Picture 1 (cartoon, rainbow, N blue to C red):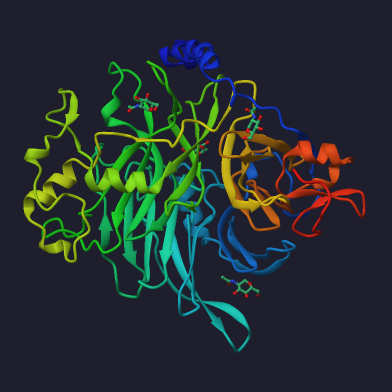
Picture 2: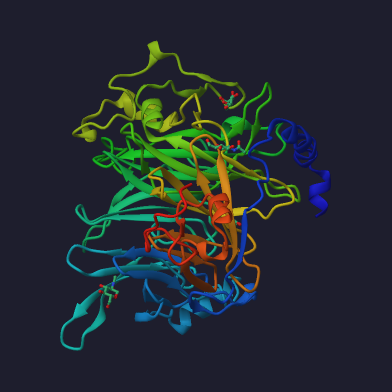
Length: 536
Ligand SMILES: *[C@@H]1O[C@H](CO)[C@@H](O)[C@H](O)[C@H]1NC(C)=O
Ligand SMILES: *[C@@H]1O[C@H](CO)[C@@H](O)[C@H](O)[C@H]1NC(C)=O
Ligand SMILES: *[C@@H]1O[C@H](CO)[C@@H](O)[C@H](O)[C@H]1NC(C)=O
Ligand SMILES: *[C@@H]1O[C@H](CO)[C@@H](O)[C@H](O)[C@H]1NC(C)=O
């Protein structure tokens, strides 16, 4: 607490709240139309508990057809998506001597377990699993054995640069089955000082890969990664980090939201840059309220998958907050993948001539050719000038503005938002289509928000867990919402239409999932029971 009172950042935040309230009217603190208490309802896995010391650190690793794969303490669970029943379990505890060594290095016994953070299913059917392994990351390959119908451990190798050391670390990983490559965004040392974006093949014998430079704050500085996905010929990384371009009176370094990308066909540079990306570029994400002095939401917390939009573009919904403080606020913004691509493909770069000078746009006339960061058939043949440019100046000068500013803002007196998932283009009973957004909160609720295109409606808030605890992952399927906290997983319906008891209330709810059924006289799930009744 003490530190907060000394912080000029906090004072600034207090002042800006009054300012913010004058800017935002429509989107600020919208009232949910319906409150649902689903604590203990639906399907459940794990234990509802508020004991943070003894956490399972659940992490949703994949949704594979009708199964959910969940990383936990010394285990991976394969759960049925429909019922959350355990279909298979892999147990993997670190050996006693490794646990002892980890405790000797000053970690707690709880942290010196093996928290599974990465899972990949290879084309061959083998399953690759990586975990923190008592602060000494390891990976294993499991092969399905026909003899006893079980997964058997067939290989173990070092997992540095693939799995984090600490279960709390915000890392991401993405496996591409066709190339057999894994992209990981994590840290590769015990103390967590060496963040990296790393790619390597997972074949036996392959040890080398491509990574971002070590010890270079211009490239990555204390990042928290939130998502990774493929779009066209690139792999995108979404994160927040300390911004080297925003040193604030040499005082507190600000955190900015970032999107970065690499080319899937990057093969590294010519020696000595043979293990470095030649295509790593990054840009700031701008989710703010427009005004002469914009109010910024800088801390990226979560993003949705890219969602196809009608004009051939893809849209990403992103969740942001202001810095951690007693007056924290959250906001949802959308970003166009087309706009992001344009900036990386044609925008100017930012540079700082030396550590004391101001950041400026790099003059286009001085840029090397081919353009730094472009995907080329053989990056090993790129000229030295292009390689050294991109290693030193990966940041774009302009930021990526959100499509139309924040869709929704949750103010100081509301629970912070932690996670986001979107069901795109849900057709309502009158034929119109809407994106439905689910937002997890720090106290174990989920908001359901409908994007009408012009504005948003908060259809409902649902209490998911008996003990208030942060939602750490959210997954939407057409009829089911999966909500993950550190110790408990819940699967509930995507809608709670039946709570409305009259046709007019059903209409007022503005939930595209719901319709009034004149035959039964009930508000019901439109997709299950077609209704000719009440049209929105
Ligand atoms: C999870 O279990 C289901 C049902 O047995 C199985 O079909 C699926 O392959 C399993 N997934 C993994 C990754 O083991
Ligand atoms: C990871 O992100 C969460 C949510 O933003 C945050 O509370 C937590 O401190 C982060 N973990 C680390 C190790 O920074
Ligand atoms: C961020 O977006 C706002 C609103 O569009 C704009 O006013 C502001 O200048 C942008 N910030 C930067 C750094 O470009
Ligand atoms: C949101 O938009 C809908 C339709 O576009 C309109 O009927 C409604 O009044 C708007 N709500 C607010 C709060 O502006």
